[in-house]
Amino acid sequence: MMDTINRESYGAAADQLAAFAASADVQRIGAVGEDILAVAGLLERERRLRRALADPGRSGDDHAALLRSVLSGKVSAEAVDILATLVTGRWSGPGALLDGVELLGVTALLSGVDRAGNLGDVEDELFRFGQVVSGDSSLAGALADTTSPLPARVQLIQDLLGGKAEPATVRLAELAAGGFGGRSFESSLTRLIELAAKQRDHSVAYVTTAVPLTEADEQRLAGRLAELYGREVSLKIDVDPRILGGVRVKVGPDLYDGTVSRRLAEAKTALAN
Image (cartoon, rainbow, N blue to C red; front, top):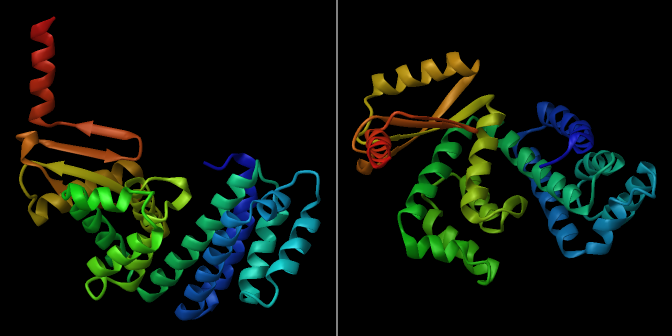
């Protein structure tokens, strides 16, 4: 998680990216996002460069000049300009800077998908893919196995999703396999779903029910949560008969558990005491 100084540094570059994305075409936005992610890969491999760009003993202008000297002619001018703004700010360390570059690249990809009008579909496809993976222990193990070469895990994702999901869904799932932000595959996927929702100015509510909700029930629940949080809420619904009845809802750190299984567990604890 970026600290206050990091958020300020990231914010200036994010604003520049947003201004670019507001006028560029969808393909161009996506290309710049891929350029930024390529630079994140470079920084992950080149520790000395990463340390130099986050060195508090050098000025922001020095950081930007170094970045331009390394990247000029290798990635798009727009990506270089946005990243130059990013490294001009102060960062708590090389790892935070790398996280910032990765996040900026993903934000660019999501901006392009949003402009194309497909972001809601991508968000839902990522969630459904996560459900498929979590329901198959061998598949979950294969994608979470960081000792396995990343190209093999990426190929597995392409085999599973290629031609069945939006290209952006496949790309984001590949980033999750690579450990977006230093997270596990499952955590990376969850974070990407939340970033997609945030791009649409939505919150994400993870809903667990014993039986499928009707469309009317979903609309009612979404409306109540929107009133509570002051913004639209994207429901991600998982049907799990083990909860026996009721509903569990998780929005960020907030958990509302009205399931029968929870009440039974509380009653059992009370009786034991």
